[in-house]
Length: 448
Ligand SMILES: C[S@@+](CC[C@H](N)C(=O)[O-])C[C@H]1O[C@@H](n2cnc3c(N)ncnc32)[C@H](O)[C@@H]1O
Image: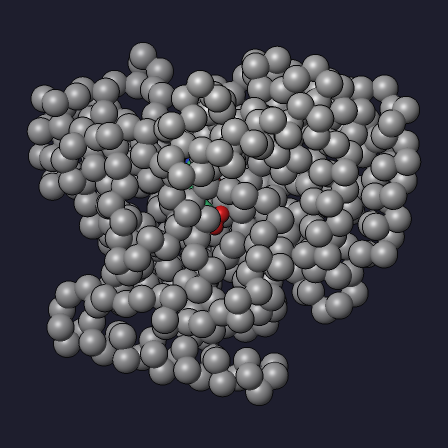
């Protein structure tokens, strides 16, 4: 470890010690600003974190702080059961921990894999040149993409299809994740989707006023799509991403993460995880699967254009099947149940969505409790919501659930500055309040 790293670790350890002392003496959540508590070197855009956009990415300062502040042994496991784009796992791997994650969204798993798989940069750049050389004459592979003609012109679809064939033919398995995420980022860049929104919404030149000050820029972008060079766009994204990924043989210990697809059934033995950091999904406010739909289609990850099977595995989803009714038995959290009684009067569907969220989060936290060692540390980052216009204190509900499953609260921090890239609120009554709770929980006894 370098002197600088040792200094950072020492500073984080003493900050954490002070914060715990304040939490214990004041008996209430301590306000912090993670952007000030942990300074990054400002190079996040050049690092692997920037290889692909993802909704509600975690502020990198949070995992950095806890990885530095908490004791861990090199090579021990760091788990993120809701890993999204792999922010936590990448930071853990940089610190010499063994990354294990899960995410129900196949695009999230792909981004995480790309971030954590070291590449031979020189060989990858040569493979990129080969892809570019064979792409003009390749036969297009056009997979099932939901409403493809609505989102892409025929010319662009043809170019993407030829790129897909060239990548599949040329790139060896180790380098496929970085090529595939670059292809996915290209798909988004050359589609008619408004670049400012996570969920695809088609740019409509007749309504340019709704784009505000950025209107002209968005409309110009639409104009450029008419003759955009898809190959050059891909080349530029992929060349940058090859440089962002860890370099093979340069001491990046992790080299390919272990990834599962559901936080509720991790393929891990009991009591084997000493450290977990995670930011679970919000209740009914984030549309991860819809946000990824164009990429999932082009990558061939949604056969027959079916998003529903992936959506059904997602906690916090907005769509429920007709048989997913309000459970009469409740959530096991008395305050949540009485709040749900109020919500049901305003909007029965929203009440069902919120209840299902708490029940499914209970399953995920029980699974976490099962896999964690005694004295293991869990950092949980979670913000409150509005559900049907009523404040829904998700952090307190999840804290109570975790405590009923064998965790105890060591520290509760509140960061009032948005620490995740949140989606635009499309549903007025399901807004996300810009404040987050960060809990440090300790696993003390076998789950209830
Ligand atoms: C707040 S995001 C995590 C963002 C991540 N920390 C990052 O920096 O990119 C929550 C994630 O939970 C995932 N998710 C939802 N239901 C899940 C489930 N049943 N198992 C695993 N992951 C799930 C979503 O797909 C989403 O990627």
